[in-house]
Image (cartoon, rainbow, N blue to C red; front, side, top):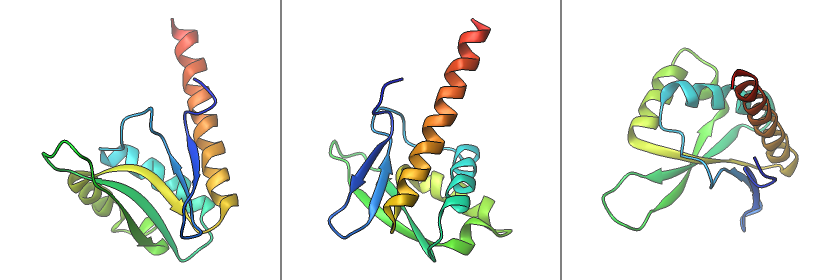
Length: 124
Protein backbone atom coordinates (compact mmCIF):
# COMPACT_ATOMS: atom_id res chain seq x y z
CA UNK A 1 0.00 0.00 0.00
CA UNK A 2 1.27 3.44 -0.83
CA UNK A 3 -0.12 6.92 -0.33
CA UNK A 4 -1.60 7.02 -3.82
CA UNK A 5 -3.71 3.87 -4.02
CA UNK A 6 -6.75 6.11 -4.38
CA UNK A 7 -6.46 9.50 -6.05
CA UNK A 8 -8.60 12.59 -5.82
CA UNK A 9 -8.87 14.49 -9.08
CA UNK A 10 -10.17 18.06 -9.42
CA UNK A 11 -12.11 17.87 -12.68
CA UNK A 12 -12.47 20.93 -14.96
CA UNK A 13 -16.25 21.11 -14.54
CA UNK A 14 -16.02 21.79 -10.79
CA UNK A 15 -16.57 18.20 -9.70
CA UNK A 16 -14.25 15.89 -7.79
CA UNK A 17 -13.37 12.32 -8.69
CA UNK A 18 -11.91 9.45 -6.71
CA UNK A 19 -10.09 6.88 -8.82
CA UNK A 20 -7.95 3.80 -8.26
CA UNK A 21 -5.51 3.66 -11.20
CA UNK A 22 -3.27 1.00 -9.67
CA UNK A 23 -6.15 -1.38 -9.05
CA UNK A 24 -8.46 -3.27 -11.39
CA UNK A 25 -11.78 -1.63 -12.29
CA UNK A 26 -14.91 -2.77 -10.48
CA UNK A 27 -16.35 -5.51 -12.70
CA UNK A 28 -18.64 -7.54 -10.47
CA UNK A 29 -21.98 -6.90 -8.83
CA UNK A 30 -20.87 -7.74 -5.27
CA UNK A 31 -18.04 -5.18 -5.32
CA UNK A 32 -20.28 -2.64 -7.05
CA UNK A 33 -22.90 -3.05 -4.30
CA UNK A 34 -20.24 -2.44 -1.62
CA UNK A 35 -19.12 0.67 -3.52
CA UNK A 36 -22.75 1.84 -3.87
CA UNK A 37 -23.23 1.43 -0.10
CA UNK A 38 -20.18 3.56 0.66
CA UNK A 39 -21.19 6.21 -1.87
CA UNK A 40 -24.78 6.29 -0.60
CA UNK A 41 -23.69 7.06 2.96
CA UNK A 42 -21.34 9.86 1.82
CA UNK A 43 -23.24 11.54 -1.03
CA UNK A 44 -25.58 14.41 -0.12
CA UNK A 45 -26.41 15.51 -3.67
CA UNK A 46 -29.25 14.32 -5.85
CA UNK A 47 -26.76 12.68 -8.23
CA UNK A 48 -23.41 10.98 -8.16
CA UNK A 49 -21.23 10.08 -11.12
CA UNK A 50 -19.50 6.83 -11.84
CA UNK A 51 -16.39 6.91 -13.97
CA UNK A 52 -16.88 4.14 -16.46
CA UNK A 53 -14.62 2.55 -19.00
CA UNK A 54 -16.47 1.59 -22.13
CA UNK A 55 -15.79 -2.06 -22.82
CA UNK A 56 -14.36 -2.34 -26.32
CA UNK A 57 -11.80 -4.23 -28.32
CA UNK A 58 -9.86 -1.08 -29.16
CA UNK A 59 -6.42 -0.55 -27.72
CA UNK A 60 -7.39 2.93 -26.57
CA UNK A 61 -9.80 3.19 -23.69
CA UNK A 62 -12.75 5.56 -23.67
CA UNK A 63 -13.88 6.94 -20.33
CA UNK A 64 -17.18 8.60 -19.52
CA UNK A 65 -19.06 9.76 -16.45
CA UNK A 66 -22.46 8.17 -15.94
CA UNK A 67 -24.59 10.31 -13.64
CA UNK A 68 -26.93 8.34 -11.40
CA UNK A 69 -29.81 9.65 -9.30
CA UNK A 70 -29.26 8.99 -5.61
CA UNK A 71 -32.41 6.86 -5.29
CA UNK A 72 -30.93 4.32 -7.72
CA UNK A 73 -28.39 3.43 -5.02
CA UNK A 74 -30.97 2.67 -2.36
CA UNK A 75 -34.03 0.91 -3.72
CA UNK A 76 -35.12 -2.58 -4.69
CA UNK A 77 -33.67 -2.14 -8.20
CA UNK A 78 -30.13 -1.35 -6.99
CA UNK A 79 -28.88 -4.93 -7.28
CA UNK A 80 -30.16 -5.20 -10.86
CA UNK A 81 -28.60 -1.84 -11.68
CA UNK A 82 -25.23 -2.92 -10.24
CA UNK A 83 -25.38 -6.13 -12.25
CA UNK A 84 -26.22 -4.27 -15.48
CA UNK A 85 -23.57 -1.60 -14.90
CA UNK A 86 -20.77 -4.10 -14.27
CA UNK A 87 -21.85 -6.22 -17.24
CA UNK A 88 -21.72 -3.28 -19.64
CA UNK A 89 -18.92 -1.17 -18.14
CA UNK A 90 -15.88 -1.20 -15.89
CA UNK A 91 -16.23 1.22 -12.96
CA UNK A 92 -12.97 3.15 -12.59
CA UNK A 93 -13.99 5.98 -10.28
CA UNK A 94 -16.69 7.97 -8.52
CA UNK A 95 -17.48 11.65 -9.14
CA UNK A 96 -18.94 14.02 -6.55
CA UNK A 97 -20.06 17.63 -6.64
CA UNK A 98 -18.30 18.35 -3.34
CA UNK A 99 -14.61 17.91 -2.57
CA UNK A 100 -15.43 16.89 1.01
CA UNK A 101 -17.44 13.92 -0.27
CA UNK A 102 -14.58 12.81 -2.53
CA UNK A 103 -12.21 13.04 0.42
CA UNK A 104 -14.63 11.05 2.59
CA UNK A 105 -14.80 8.23 0.02
CA UNK A 106 -11.01 8.20 -0.34
CA UNK A 107 -10.71 7.96 3.45
CA UNK A 108 -13.16 5.02 3.58
CA UNK A 109 -11.38 3.21 0.74
CA UNK A 110 -7.97 3.77 2.37
CA UNK A 111 -9.33 2.46 5.67
CA UNK A 112 -10.79 -0.68 4.07
CA UNK A 113 -7.56 -1.37 2.18
CA UNK A 114 -5.47 -0.97 5.34
CA UNK A 115 -7.75 -3.36 7.23
CA UNK A 116 -7.58 -5.89 4.38
CA UNK A 117 -3.76 -5.77 4.35
CA UNK A 118 -3.55 -6.15 8.13
CA UNK A 119 -5.88 -9.17 8.07
CA UNK A 120 -3.93 -10.76 5.23
CA UNK A 121 -0.65 -10.31 7.13
CA UNK A 122 -2.15 -11.97 10.20
CA UNK A 123 -3.11 -15.00 8.13
CA UNK A 124 0.37 -15.38 6.58
